[in-house]
Figure 1 (cartoon, rainbow, N blue to C red):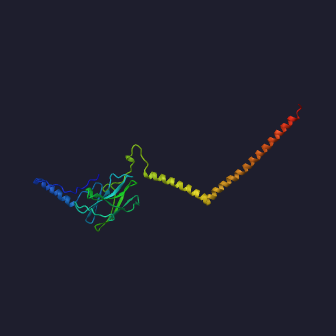
Figure 2: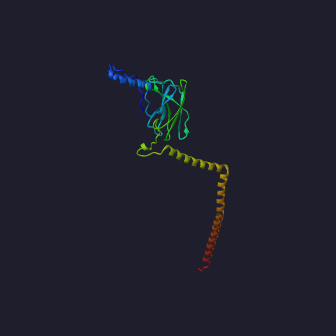
Figure 3: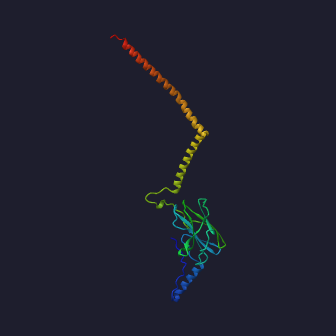
Length: 254
């Protein structure tokens, strides 16, 4: 889970010791100057006076798991921006030279219920390939233009991981392997369909098939004729043999 900056003000000790107050006040002043710490595995970017913390919604980030591009928008310490509209900002996700469609953000908080982190917005996406990803966030915040592009890495946000290392006891085929297999089956089905269509429509492929069938019939016809002729000759010879045997019995003396 990501570490969130507590937006509630810290409690002031009733009677702080004079010696302890100096370091405490100094730390507080430093925090007010630099703002809230970045969310773990997020990169901090600026657009004018606005701060955007950009990263994955869920980390570690694995292939095939629902996730989202997360931004946390603020304007100074304890000043989250909670009124962005759906079309104010969008993000295009890129990996392996492939760009997604522009994704819109939805609030990840509910001010009335007190749920979530104020200023957090998420754009849902499911990564389907391992590797490095880039987020290109564009739009505007209260009129301030936003055009920020960031990439995953050791100092920014998570690189997407495959699931084979955490699968047990059987390692499942990857989405890429399944897609390749489905594509192969699809191409085979298309080839068979094209062959059938060509045969039915009388195209060159169908003509070739019919030619092969005609050749087979032409080769079979002489064999049928020879076989039929031999069969007739055999029948005639059999009848002649029976007639000769009967005649021989009648010629014998009683």
